[in-house]
Image (cartoon, rainbow, N blue to C red; front, side, top):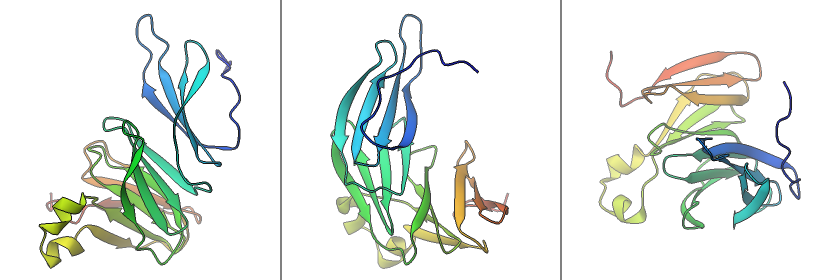
Length: 187
């Protein structure tokens, strides 16, 4: 592989790189990067310039990006924060974990986030606005955070199937699991 474009150097360790706009005729596309110091930058491939979109708290352990909705999920040990890039603000926050978050992944529809943790569990968080949560019953509120238990080691990677009904998790011992979402039918 050859390096076709060198973009200017970031200010600290890059923790995530995500395609925002794919290259099209006459345009170079753009890439989003997150840095350990909290900077979230948009890189224009055509000119190699970086533009600061927002700043999130420093020290993120994992990041995920949902391209269709322009959402950025960032974990800090046992907390997940979701930011809407277009508004440069935090929209959701979850601090329900007993173990540190080790990986994050958005669902294809951008309505859920998978969180792998250091205790081998995978959580699926169906995040909603405060107004939506206020109208839910206690049982419906409990369903917003689902736990999937079955790994004997730290979760190292997560991925959704493109249709979102199934997701995959992998751990440090080399185990790979496929999970059917609780709300999916038996087929």
